[in-house]
Length: 64
Image (cartoon, rainbow, N blue to C red; front, top):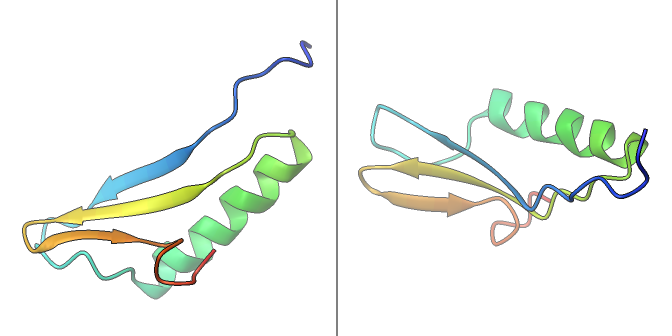
């Protein structure tokens, strides 16, 4: 396996409800993704949730 795997900069998904507020499952999943990334030497810099009401950044909200 190559040691030059590209870094994952952001995780992104939408909330069809329109409210971009991260849910508890979103927060838990993000923690799992970050931990898996560490094992693979892939940095996860942010997780964005998109909804009709805007975009929520886990990093800006202090969730990462």
